[in-house]
Image (cartoon, rainbow over all chains, first blue to last red; front, side, top):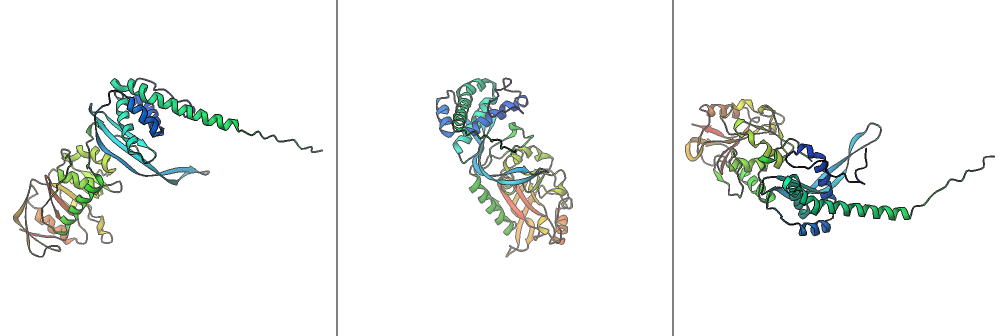
Length: 167
Length: 198
């Protein structure tokens, strides 16, 4: 499997009305929005021109979801633990519905993520939203990851096993 | 978390304040069952989603969750996506498998719904039925728990043999089904303990 966490895959085709075909790209931008830091998104959102009007369909609301994992030889699922999730669904003025999920208690970010999901699905506003929000967020995320990798690499300790003389 | 197969186009907002609004509606539902035949009017900021009326929408949003199964009759079937989105409810293919039933067309025979068992009478279905009209001073004479005096009620749009079906439902006690009758923003509760004459 390609390591998608390190090199974010750009949207394959221009998404828009063909929603189902754009499933992978949508998954990717929803992931970027979910992982983004609140301060980064605030800054980019403030600078985004042409913000749409929207109505809330559900939420933003916070709750707990149960994470399940698989372990052992037979891979049976077990309950790993609960995590906080905030979700929101909105309908934009153009009628497009967007959904946003954030893995913590953050009503603002869930709502803005839902609005951006709607904008990104709409062919007319897709490019502007990628250029203004998703692209910069991807770069910030990658920078952060590389910095952490460099710090880890600088402190790497190499262990050599000295061959013991057996005879 | 994802709900496959929900068409975005049909989604409408639910309660404006889900916590408080559902508590108020739950309180109204409780009062309706405790005082059978008393007509309550819901005062809510809720956009009813056609084909559901306001009281039907409000009861459905309040009572349904992912642990129960819902059956929708033909006229209210378009509300399926709306209810699944807001409540996470499961849909039942047949009325006899459902814990809750939303009905806006002609009422099917009461015997076609789940009545629970002697050991688990609480498993009986709750029906949320849209009727043509509710009248506080109608031909029905109501008796039973919750009514210190005889109550009166008139309901438009139920089958002609409803009283006979209801008597049957009552004879099966503690098994049986419970009814909410809704007309616009008004609702009335008919618990299985209620005796209807006339």
